[in-house]
Amino acid sequence: MRVLVVTAVPVERDAVTRAFGGTPETVALPGAELHRLGAFDVLAGGAGPAAAAAAAAFALASAPYGLVVSAGIGGAFTPLTPLGSLVVASDIVAADLGADTPDGFLPVTALGFGRDHFAPPPALVRKVAAAAGAAAGPVLTVSTVTGTAERAGALLAAHPGALAEAMEGFGVAEAAARAEVPVLELRAVSNAVGPRDRDAWRIGDALAALTEAFGKTAPVLEGWNRHDDRHRS
Image (cartoon, rainbow, N blue to C red; front, side, top):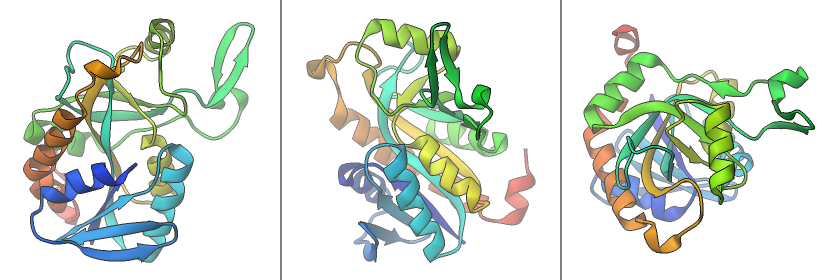
């Protein structure tokens, strides 16, 4: 089976496909274009969890996949993940899905609905982190990118140990779970979470790191589609 990689925007999709070399075959899906190279199908599904979930769901309905990867650039919370470094999600967390109350934020699970996180296969997280030289830890999915130190602090207080935030991982994970396909999230750090200083962002460095990461991890991701690899620690 194939590996589906879902990014937000075409520049991230192209950074991933550059890792595999050659000219991709293009496949039209509703509202999006999928690029196929070797064992990998790479899709720019749109920004935010809703667009990412819809695009991933259409792709998952179009072909059999053994693994789904949410990939792209994102912001980092800690000095452990400097600009240009890589993060693999040990947990994919819906950080702002819930309700605001006088006593603070309540996750959607506290309201008695759905779920608020997905855990990728731990063995796969370890293998990918080792191959890419990436940090492993929780990655938060938000619908509104953090723009203040106060909000960054509140997110860290609610999710101790979180390494990064992005906007698509939880949506991709929701679609993958409904299709009963394992999910992974891999991010390259382009900026610090907090006040939005665009002059300090390193988007080019992060995209280059994303290409390098998929070049290093492609054998691991392909191998995970073999049943025996899924049961090795």
